[in-house]
Length: 359
Ligand code: 13P
Ligand code: SF4
Image (cartoon, rainbow, N blue to C red; front, side, top):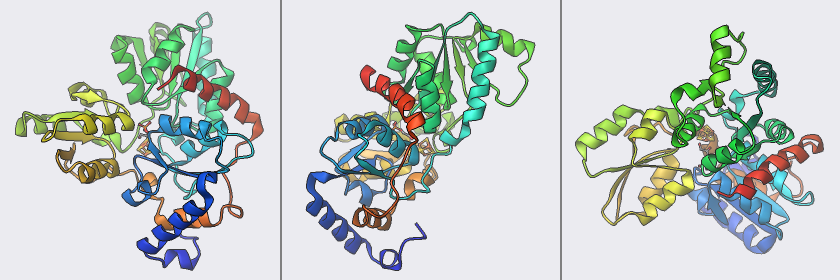
């Protein structure tokens, strides 16, 4: 962060790494550093646990011995950890400006308004809300209050099944692509999936489409994953017929349909780890993860799917060694991630339902 004291901003990577390691050694199990797969290489190297958003939220919920949980990721991840861990534990996000633009695409007011309109259009249907992990905590609370649950890219299909056992229609937000891809995997037809138009009047045609729909999607998307196109896949297949293509389910449907495998960041890591030596794998996900996989699996040929170095999540990239060092050296004086008790209980209910269905 720019506001870091000079001695952090001026320090070199080796010094910062050594200082972070010294604090971690001194604190032992009292401090846990969680690192999402999209974090920079040097941050991942310092994580006690590295994982996808589902795996890390489970670890946060189970880290009973930790007094301090430092989440190297983006805000919604640290807030989920805060919601799930015990009140006396302290949770930190080393760079407080690291958000998720997709999560910000659905506001509490907009979702509430949409929910009321959908219920009005379908008064006799049971509608189940499902919120992607990438949302504001207030929306996780909305979901918990209304009988629904949270899902991540690793358990969206199980979450959809869970919800269909309890309701006739699902209202999924904010990622339209994960929602559409999951609906397709569950055998739903395109006409059974409706893309909601927030902030606009519901026309007669829209009403009929909502009544016919099994899944109502929010029009959110990830600006990183929507950079991958079907052309990228076609170019790879023409150039390298033996290539295996693995993508994240936040990619567009035609990209997911054209890939050999699709899954969360943890799935992608496992896919590369278990691939045969000498395999060529083109990956449709964030560049920091792809670069790390290429660096750690030199016996395989790992590439980023688009071939252009633009698939970077600038929010994930914000967390620097200086931020992490400042955080771990000042745990008792810097701001923790806090959630209002009012929303925490309902958000926790929705997250716990997710943990119950598994990943
Ligand atoms: P995972 O749930 O796969 O970790 O993904 C989180 C995310 O933000 C992907 O863009
Ligand atoms: Fe959000 Fe996309 Fe970044 Fe994931 S990669 S944190 S969805 S902006």
